[in-house]
Image (cartoon, rainbow, N blue to C red; front, side):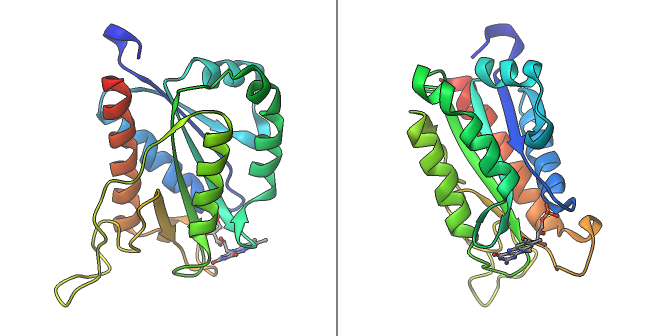
Length: 190
Ligand SMILES: Cc1cc2nc3c(=O)[nH]c(=O)nc-3n(C[C@H](O)[C@H](O)[C@H](O)COP(=O)(O)O)c2cc1C
């Protein structure tokens, strides 16, 4: 971490239609509220300065919508562009985490989160789980619960395919904020 200025957290994400941007902003807010310096990077237009921010980060959070059962193509293009850093072990031992959004309640989001974890492992990074019990899984639970979709590997949100980003649910936004805060706290400890 960076000492007096707090840990550096970078969020590298893609969003085709804005829903994943809502989650990225939530992760950003959670990490910033927990004291991190946060850089938000849209990977489809990443600049040299933003690559440098990734290299300098204590933790990188990967985010993408789930398209056809995995991260979107734009995110995959970014992941492939990290291969020189993979060869140099540039991100070795950094912390990593991930989030995704899909139209269906499941929608195979787990596969996207698993893909992020594998990408992190290829870079020698340390994966941070969501760290929450599942919500909405008992007679007293509801769709307003934190982690309402019951993921462990990262933050997952569901947004109806015929509605805009403004309809992303508060529970999913709060789950994203939780992940950001957790990453910042753990980055400050390492
Ligand atoms: C090409 C494409 C593929 C998609 N594949 C899936 C999928 O596999 N599972 C799912 O539940 N939703 C799928 N969706 C729906 C998106 O995941 C959903 O609309 C999401 O909120 C989009 O996020 P974005 O606005 O950040 O792009 C797909 C959407 C598109 C455009």
